[in-house]
Length: 229
Length: 302
Image (cartoon, rainbow over all chains, first blue to last red; front, top):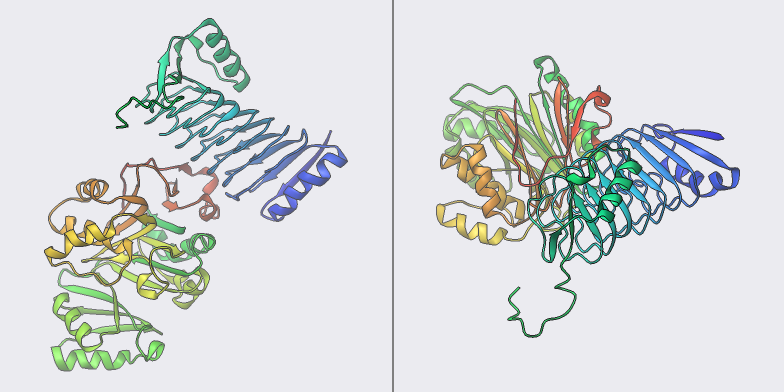
C-alpha cells in the first residue's frame, strides 16, 4: 500500500486536495497523512475514492466534507461543519467537533469521540453519527433520515421538527424540540445502538439509551388548530 | 464576519513578549476581517491619581502630522496640566495626573476631530483601517508589552469602514469590548441608555453593547452580573471579548452563531475566532484547547 505524507506547514492545502482528488485514485495511493493542519479549512473535502486520510492536529471548517468512500481520521478537534454533506465512507474526530457536525449528511459514519457543538446532524438525510460526548442545542434539527447515537447529554430543542431520523441518547436531554418525543426502545433499537457503538469503537450498554423520534404531528397541516404555534 | 483575538500571559516574564506573541494571531484572522484592525493592551496600572488617554489624529486634517507637542503646550497653557505625550504618527498616548473628564471635554471642544480612543490607568488602545498586517506594522504592535490584550479584525457589516468604527470600542475607564456578529436591537439599547446621559460616538451596533456593559459596571454590578444582564438585554449574534484592567471575559450568544476557541497552557490563555490564529503559539500542541459554550461566562484574571 502506497503511503504519502503532506506537511501543511510546507505545502499549500490546495495541492493536498488536488492530490486526493486526481492522483490518489489514479496512482492507487491508499493512505495519506496530513501534518500541521493548524486549523486550515477544507482539509480532505470531496474525497471520491477509498483513500484513508489521517490528519494529525486540529482541523478547521468543513474537514472531510462531501466525503464519498474515503476515510478521514482527525487526531485533534474539528471546526464547523465537519463531514458536512458526507455521502459515504467514514469521518472520525478524536477530539471535539464544533457546530454543524455532519450537517446534511446523506450517508456514511461520522464518529466524534469528544463533544459536538450546536446543530450536530442538522438536516441529516441519511448515514449515522455517533458522538462519544454531548451535543449542543438544536441538534438533529429537521433530520430527515439516518441515525444519531449520543453517549452524553443533549442541549436544548433536540430533534426539533424531526422527520424520520432516529436519535438515541444516553445522558440527559435538556429539552426536546417541537414534535420530537421519547419512545420505548425496541429490540431492533437495542441492536441498532449496539451495532453503531461497535462501529464507533465505544463501549456502553445499549439499554442505557433513550429513543427520540418524530411524533409526526407536524407532517400534516391542521387547519382546525388555532394557528398559535 | 470579523475576527477576535485575545491573549493573557500568566507569567510576568512573558509580559514584554505580549505583542510579539499576538501579532501572528491578529494576522491569522485577516480573512475574517481585512478592512480594519485594532487592539487594546493592558499594562501595569498607573498611580491612583494618574490617567492615560489614547488619542487618534487620523480623522483630523493634519492626520499623522498632528502637532502633538503643541497639544502638550496647550494643555499646560489652558489647563495647567503637565502631560507626557508619546506619539507615533497619528496615534498618541497622553499621560498625566488628572481628573480625565474635564481634560477629555476640553480636547473634544478644542480638537473636535481628534478621536479619544480610551481612558484609564492600564489601557492603551490602537485601531485603524487597513489590513491587520498593515495596522500592526503602523503601530509596531509586536513591541507592545502588558499582561493581557484584546484584538479585532473587522469585516464591516453594520456600519461604515472608518477608524472610529473599528474595534475595540471603549466606554468609561479601563474597559473595552470587541465583537464578532451583529446585534438586532442596538437602537433599542441606545434609546434605553441615552436618558441615563450616555453619549454615543458612532452608529455602530457594537458601541451599544460596549456602553451597556460599562454602564452596568459603573452602576455597581460586578463583571459576572453585568454580563448576565447583557444576555438579557442584547439580542442578536455575538461573540464578545472584553478587557478590564485585570480581566479578560468572553461570552457567546445562545445560538453560538459566531465562533470562538480557547487554548490554555501554564504560560497563557489565548482566545481566537478560529484555531488558525492559535496554531503558532508556543507549546500549542500541549495546550488545553476547547470551544467556549454558548451563554456561558468565561473570565480569566490577569
